Image (cartoon, rainbow, N blue to C red; front, top):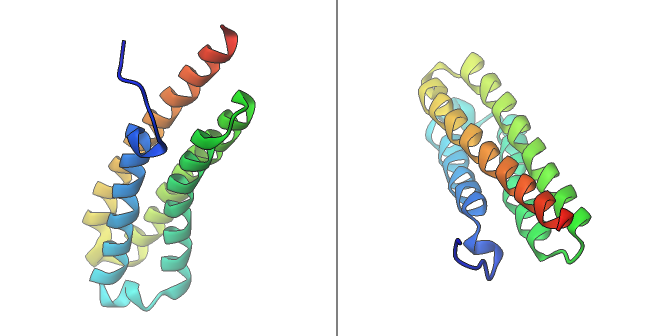
Length: 126
C-alpha cells in the first residue's frame, strides 16, 4: 500500500499544480509582449492557482462528496489553463513552444487529478 498522505502538500497532483503555477508565472514574465497582455496573463495565472488551491481545499474537506467537488473544480481549471495556452500560442509566437510544453504538464496534472477523484470515489464506496 502507498504511503499515508498527511497534508495536501503530499499529493502528487498538488505538487504538479504548484509546478504549473510557477511555470505559468515565468511564461507571463519572459515574453515582453505577453507580459503586457494583462488580461490574458491574469486569467491564466488565476486558473493555474485555482488548480492548486482547489486540490488543497478538497484535501482538507471532511466529507467525501465535498472532496470530489473540489477535485473536480481543479480538473476543470486544468482545461481552462490548457485552453488559455492555445490563446498564448496563437497570439504570441515567441511563447508558443514554452506554452505547448506547459500544456503537456497540465494534461499530466489533469490525469493525476482524475486518479485522485477515482480513488476518493472508491473510498466512498467502502
